[in-house]
Image 1: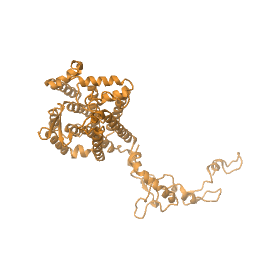
Image 2: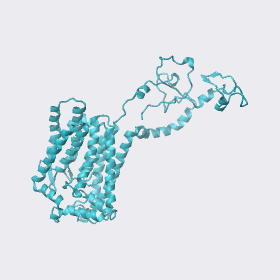
Image 3: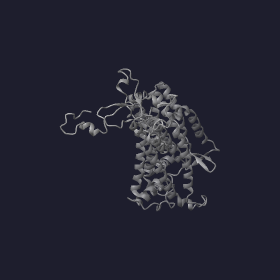
Image 4: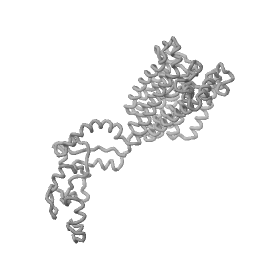
Length: 517
């Protein structure tokens, strides 16, 4: 599908302009929609609309589940004002901020973020990551994550550092693999500085969950960029050994591994939360106990509205509800990678694929942790779990994907170059040679050019777009019926209708004049 500019005849020189003026209002009302949706090739617009729709659905579903999972906790807490909608109101506020940030990101060319402003974004991210180590700004949360306390709010810099690392990695990969403007040594050095430094700062918080998610995303981006598979396997091996060492280094991480293997070894201690999550899934069965009817949220399941909201979904909506959530994320993955496939350059492909991969990897880390397949990491479900930093960063990731889609275009073809030679007929332009105002379309069916006035072979200057049909052509047709064709305003009268021309001028079936005009 190719987008072409369309032109029409002048509204002041054609008798049919009155009908065009009557529909101009409707045309102007549709112009914005046609430009935004109908004028975009299907390969770009379809995944974009699917992505936006599924994100809206997941976010609204998240509002519902956050209210359901947190209403009892906030209602019974005097600190929270005994307000059952306390967490929902905050989630709505953070989602509004994230939507505004996503709209700003999507409206700009992704090259602005990944090339021209990437150093500024990287520097600001490093500053935020360093602030959490200062005593007046840092605050511990649940022994696993470091935050920046800003009044009544808490900001988790590692959530926004994910976006920065994706932008930097996509920029470096394009410069090395596609543009080939740097050597391997330069690529490794810049990768160590611009990607390694923020990863180390995140790991030192400590936030091993975010480090694992970002590292897995970088592996996906490396594969898509064309890195040698031997290097990828080497990095995977070293990373797995590093994660194992870090997990066994301290008591807190070792306890999580033991809890994953056997939560009933300490059912009232480290295994309590995981066991209560199992009870929630078991109570839900196939169709669930009903929306809002969870029993585990009555102070049995800690952090039911955050880390373990997927267990509440399983209890209230059953197996079908959890599979529905996973299906929605599968559609999001399809749309994100479809956008990456048609991105105009490697940087766009890696940004779209990286943002999509990060969202789905974070989902899998949470789901696998809640199911006891891997150690708990404290990472929330994207778009669904409560968390200001999480919902904002996830929406910003979606805005980045949409930015790639908005600035994707079809490659120029030979037909596009041919259309550039089209021109208006002499009587279709004004005295200044400009296109007629109010033009809304063009027609290739119009007053024919007589053979004697057509350009000779080899002297054609391109396709001429002229007006055709309509009232003017009907007025130019002779009214009298004669056997002899004649010219009037350049049109040949071939008879009143096509049937008479095909049957011939005679009155009988055996007329020898059949087929003659």
